[in-house]
Amino acid sequence: MVKILAFAGSGRKDSVNKKVVQVAAQGAKEAGAEVTFVELESFDMPIFTEDLEAEKGMHAGGQQFKELLMSHDGFLIASPEYNSSYSALFKNAIDWASRKVGDEKPLQAYKGKVAGIMAASPGALGGMRVLVTLRMLMENLGTLVLPTQKAVGNAFSLFDEQGNCTDEKTEKALKAIGRQVAETCQKLKD
Ligand SMILES: Cc1cc2nc3c(=O)[nH]c(=O)nc-3n(C[C@H](O)[C@H](O)[C@H](O)COP(=O)(O)O)c2cc1C
Image (cartoon, rainbow, N blue to C red; front, top):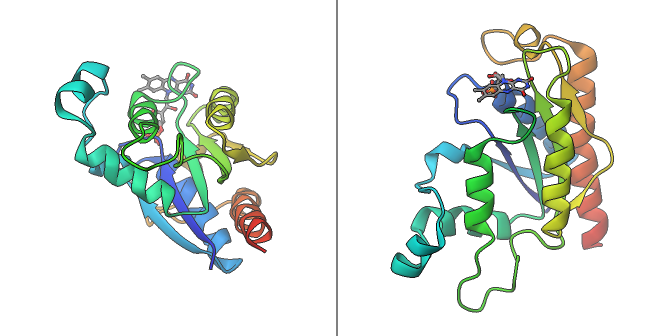
């Protein structure tokens, strides 16, 4: 069975990006994939420095997140746009998981994986600028980022108190990204 890891680049409790990625996750599940949703802020990952790595080696939280990436076929990522780019929380996690330990292959967490990317913002543009940087980052790491992407604008008004998407068009677009990631992973496995 195809396994997909879903996460958002925001550590905010009420993050709209967490809501968005969970709608896409539902689409992947409906296409037959097993989806694991994780919250980046739950991993113990200090700000990466090479001195810290040289002194203490791979940090346990970084290794835990890396192993999750390695054990899944694809990713669903929803990112907030912070000053036109991704958050420090997100990039720090990506950097930790890019570090090789023992017999791991270089960039094993990223190479050959498939990703669907999304952004959400209370602003009208939905964080569309972060999608450019996010796509470039993930592709440079060896992940195949699917062409279809979605920036969800005015995002605070599109979810009810339970976190359900109240806009049919947005829900359909997000679920389609989840489905496409699941289907592409399956084709690569066949
Ligand atoms: C440091 C910072 C920079 C931001 N920059 C942008 C931005 O460039 N574009 C944008 O649409 N929203 C920007 N925002 C607003 C975020 O889109 C908003 O806080 C959003 O809710 C974050 O996503 P979340 O709900 O998943 O946490 C910024 C917020 C912060 C804290």
